[in-house]
Image (cartoon, rainbow, N blue to C red; front, side, top):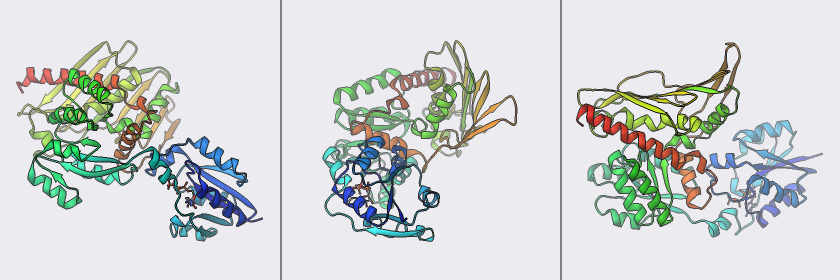
Length: 449
Ligand code: CTP
């Protein structure tokens, strides 16, 4: 018996898919069809798939051509499957010509002529249009956004804005993305959405003007330095029918949500203490160490460290205290936030001039979760118990530097797909904004800056 295998997303099932499956079937006696999961497609940058995995499986099943349907959920699975199912022929459409030649050591590889003039992408275009995105601020994070953008379908980075001519033109030369220096409104005219990665204190004004011009906004944390301004931006976004997403990257990393659900799942019992720490020694000449108003550890990292606390305990804490160590310029090189809840305690620690173990520890009545640095990307975490030999290790999937996940979510939201709102809620953002405002007031009192 000749066994054949083929894979695909099979979104918006069309003639090209049917023709491929017919010919794949004709290559042998038994056809296995691998259908991708949503997670796998997301990780590959296919964020705008419309049909759910089950609908796509169902459409393949209805053709009656597949003898067996399997799920494809990770990148190197094809090699595993070929061995596992004793496959003789691997086949896909000619758009993949050459890509899977490495499988020839395991079985025969056949590229079938692609059916012209039809694709899921074409059909999706009737549903979604490409989001033309402009980057505001061409500093350290902008190049990462450009690099990660290559993995996010549905988004085109078309321009950038930076009032500082010199750094703008350096960026323009290096990344071949036109940078506008003066006319912000003109810059906005050429885009559907903006990514704000400028200095912290400028976020609010840029976001407000972009929203007012009907543009979607993905803004690095914090979107504003005051709670009322943050609220105002969200209601303005609702009023104008645009998406406002705050870029706390961790919230969108798939492993982070898994970790949170593990903690909620009861394996470590009732949660009693959370300690989240994020430190990175910043260069002495860097903005973090020189901007006496908006540099420092809190504004850099507090949102990340507060996030797991709010996710697990909620935002109704009973008490809060914030302690900072300032350098001679009044910049907080280290800040510790302590929160008291009815049934649990929490500490968030951040540093730009003090180094310590950057870990997340969630302590419960039966055991604890330990996620070591960089827990904010959540590539790995462990459950540990009283018995030191009893350790459960989790290694969730993670791609690139993590920015692609928030970018994908942004594009999905713009396209009206709003199933992931729970990843970072407005309530959580406002709670972070409230603490930020409190911190800035306290800093003003303590340092006069
Ligand atoms: N296929 C084909 N002819 C087409 C479209 C797809 O033969 N006109 C084949 C692909 O080469 C692949 C299989 O069908 O082997 C599943 O493809 P999939 O990626 O799911 O479909 P596309 O329409 O190519 O999807 P997209 O536009 O999202 O890439």
